[in-house]
Amino acid sequence: MSTIETPVRDASCAQAPLLAVLGGDLHVPLLDGRRVRYANLDYAATAPALASVAERVNHVLPLAGSVHRGAGVPSQVASALYEAARASVARAVGARADDLVVFTRNTTDATNLLASAVPAGAGDVVTLDVEHHANLLPWQRTAGGHRCVAHAATIEETFSRLEDALAARPTALLALTGTSNVTGETLPLQRAADLAHRHGARLFVDAAQLAPHRAIALSALGVDYVALSGHKLYAPYGSGVLVGRRDWLDAAPPYLAGGGAVREVTTDSVDWATGPARHEAGTPNLAGAVAIAAAFEALAALADEDGSDLRHAHERALRQRVLDGIADLPGVHPLSIWDDADDAIGVVAFAVDGYAPGHVGAYLSAEHGIGVRDGRFCAHPLLAAFGRPEGALRASFGVGSRLEDADRLVAALRQLVERGPDHAYCASQSGWVPEHDTRDLAAWAGLDLGGAAKPTPCGAG
Image (cartoon, rainbow, N blue to C red; front, side, top):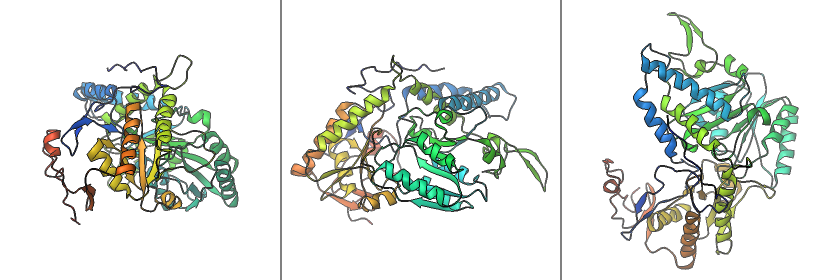
């Protein structure tokens, strides 16, 4: 099996990546003909695969057979690997002995699965308005309904509002983000669990952003359910996870009807399985499950001699470098949800006066080789609360980031506000693009992209 690379230990200065990622030294073409190392500041959308994760997957694929569906040696190996990955994930998130680990496609899929399992008559589901759409929309389908609580300017007042909401009427589930996908600010999860349990509810945590940056311990925190995605966790192989208490999941209708989810089938009846199999019909994603387990294994190695997590200092240095760098840039405004948030992962959200977010994103990419996210981040209510219905920008860091990436972003933003971009841009059907883009991305990638990488003409759409 693959080895876990030795983490870099000087994380306090963030000069070097903590772990090797695929594409870490990728060089991309600019409008002026140069090629520069790509500054990936979009980890919060999809993180690159860890080199050790890719190595593990490549080792497994030639050995793979049909999971739980064959007597051949590859099938036996695949089945053992799949269940070993399940057990590894359970350990990584501090699951209780009787918790279920169900592999899904991603966090959205996992959240929809749990939404289908909330018992009728148990009460409604309460969320905050800061949530990603994946932690808002699924709950609207639950039998008991959904209430969305407006956040306050502080976490203290926000929790007071949640307390009032839970006390107002029976609540089955409090569903909260572990850390905002927009600003990176984290919530006190043990406090949230205590609040939910005090009012007879359970706590679900959307950990899509939290899991790649912080250790999670369901049992110690009192969290009842957690969902996460491999593509955020340096394991972009199409898999996610729902972990939590088995009673709701065993009693829920099977999430997918199909082979593997049953004990016995006749032409007019079915006896459904319990446990993870109940919700994992069809041939499972072996590579995805193995990748998530391998990613957790590699991230667990990021502990210093005193037991502290190297990710904290690494991301804190990167985040603060950007915040300090843009503090004196006129018209550049960092965004935050809570005045009293004392912890955040490596994410900085900001807006630039006089420029559409897509315009800034296109400029950063085409002239500086920097990738950020622009738009509303699947968090429309939060962006509306910020007074930014047109969206904003988000720079996000991870274990493959380095201080140079933060400095390049600040320098590029300084150029933008002081003298503007060197090239003209326009809004097209596919978003903001350079008016004259001669780069051949298909040739650069060495792939047949079917014309999809050709520049979209300005004015199209």
